[in-house]
Length: 438
Image (tube, rainbow, N blue to C red; front, top):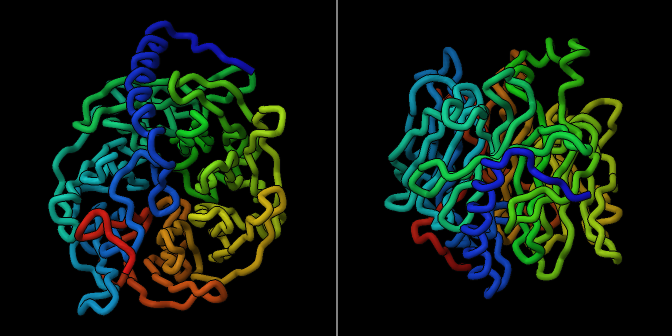
């Protein structure tokens, strides 16, 4: 299905963006496809192939915990360091605005971090001294300048930052769009998510395969739902209908949607297979608890289909974050409700098989692995109003080693005992931004 954007102004802006991206793509395609720590933008430089040195956690402020403010927390993860596994720096940004995801600029010198409630975007300098990030800019007019709210995914393009919003200013529902800034934080373009012809207008994650000139986006829900208390939401049958059930395949250079897939149950994170020549990506649907494969078939047609269950769907384990290995042979899948990390064998992506599982805590959300797959990190918070209550509201960062058979705990940072808040998204940095294998 070929779609046409309806707004002439948007078309012009999208074409302008496409031309800009095209230049970067041409330059990029002269070299081998790259990705960073298995899940970041392939346009990002400074691939950390060896030991990461610092781990940054975008942390939600929590009432009654420390200064109650959202903050960027930096942990030393250098083996043998006197401060290994400990917090070495915190940077509060003021207030609680539902801190959520982060993304590096293409030069890896700056880290963008968003808040889903007040829609503020914070830009941190992590290139000058990654052990002590510094806040250099705050974008606080997203809703006024774009009409969108809830900046979720930050994805580096050449000289640009592509942001996927979750909602809109008008009704706080799920119809939303993509926003492009330059690296200085100036607005370049907006691109609406497709509505009609199978499109529901929802958005969530972004993942790009430059070699295929393809971008995939997924879908979640709007501000009204993600800011609602989870127990109240689950009992609200009308609200439960307001979740995305589509993925969109885009022509990246033109920034136009070319095909819409039906993927019921809120498909979330998207991971392309990173090995050269691979033509498939995988995602997990949160509400239907399935892995979906998006793949180009022998006839050149892109299709999406369910290929595996994640746990027992009748118990709503709620698959959340996923992390693919660098050789696309395996996939970590976290299930929030049972606090479990599951490893799937992707030797045959048409039929993934769970080969390992370990309970990480009462709840677990994000997972990040090193490029060599030997170190895996987990954090606990999903959304402030969706996290578990009482004793089950564990908030942590846990680091593990992985030898191919067993996760072995290396350290734990208790974010409540440390007075930090709710631990959410993680990113790695290194002293030299291009660390080599030890």
